[in-house]
Amino acid sequence: MPDRPDTTGDIARAVVAAACAAPVAYESEPQLLLLTTRHDGRADWLRAGQALQHALLLLTLRGLRASLFHQAMEWPDLRARAAAVLPHRCTPQMLLRVGHGPAGFPTPRRLPVPPVTRRSPLAPSVSDEAAV
Image (cartoon, rainbow, N blue to C red; front, top):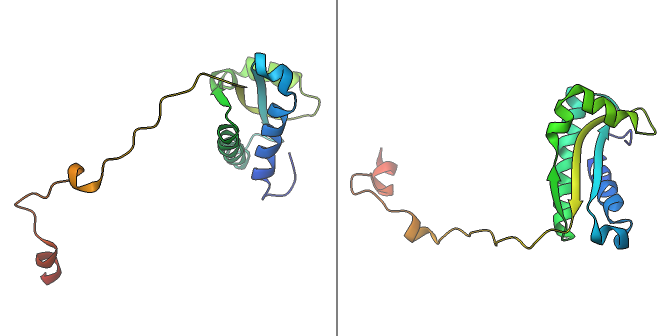
């Protein structure tokens, strides 16, 4: 992980670049990505969350899907096994499965304001509130 505190976006771009590095092999099988930090304190958790958020947005932008395997990081023995395969001394924070998934349903959009909201006849009008 870079030493500068403003590199969350750089970390996320590196995660996405790793996911997209081998498009031929990547097309048929999903890839596992492990998000790590140098330490395991509150600031590290925050930076990992920021990097995860950025990575998920970038993956979505590239048309990829991600599944979070946070349960694996909640068990100390599984987390230690994940750390053991890393070349550098890092703390695993999140395991992701990244790949091409089926097309999802479009996100429902909010209706225009008038059909959604109604003013109660008992509610004071804007001019009544201004007079108070």
